[in-house]
Image 1 (cartoon, rainbow, N blue to C red):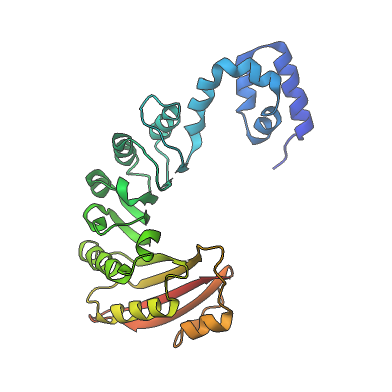
Image 2: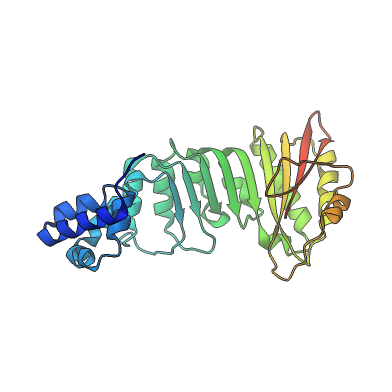
Length: 287
C-alpha cells in the first residue's frame, strides 16, 4: 500500500503544530501508524498535548483485539481504567492475557468477562482470578491457566483447547499426583475438550524420562481422555544444559519424530486409554 515517507509526514506535522490547533494535531497524530511514529518524539507536540493526555489514553482501546494486562492497579479510578472502558465499549476483543502475580479488582475482571463473552476466544489467566462469573459466561477456543491449583476445575470455563502452565507444582515431589487429579477433574466437567497441554519447565528437579513415562501410563488407565495430549518442555533454568537430539530420542523411545515442527523437536505416538478412546501423545522440546 503506498504511503508518504516519514520525513514528509514529519514536515506536515511540524507545520500543523506551528499553527497551534490542537484538534487538528490530534486527528493527524492518530490518523495512522506512520503519522504517529513521525510525531511521537516531537517535544512541541508533547507540550501542546500535555493537557490532553487523558484524551489520548481514551483513544487507545478503540481498535484493540488482543489485550495483555501486565500492571497492577487497585482502584477503578486508575489511569488505565479509561483504556479498559474503551475496550469494553468497543466489544471486539478476541484475546486477553493477564500476567501472573498481579492485583486487579475482581469486579473489573468480571465486568470484562461479562461484557466481552461474545467475542473473547482466547484467554491466558492466573488461577487466582478464575471465578464463577468466568466459568459461567465464557465459551473459548483456547484457555491457558497460570499457576493452576487443585481447585482449578471448580471455576474452569468451557473451552476446546486447555493449557496448564504450573511452574510451582512442577517443583514439588507430588507434581504428577496433583496434575493427574487436575486432568481427571477437567475431563469430568469438560468432556468436549479437544486438547490438553502441560507446559513443563526443564530443571534439575524434574526427570524428563520419568515424567513422559508417568503420563503415558496415566493415559493408559484414564477412562476419558481428549484426542490430543501435549507435554511441552521449556527452558526455565539458564544453567540447565539442554539434552542433545539423540538424548531426546532416547527419552521418547517408541515415539515418531515429527519434522514439521520448525521451532523445536516434536515426538508423537498414539496411546490407547483405559476407555474406548485413544489419544495422540505429543512431546515437545526446545531447540
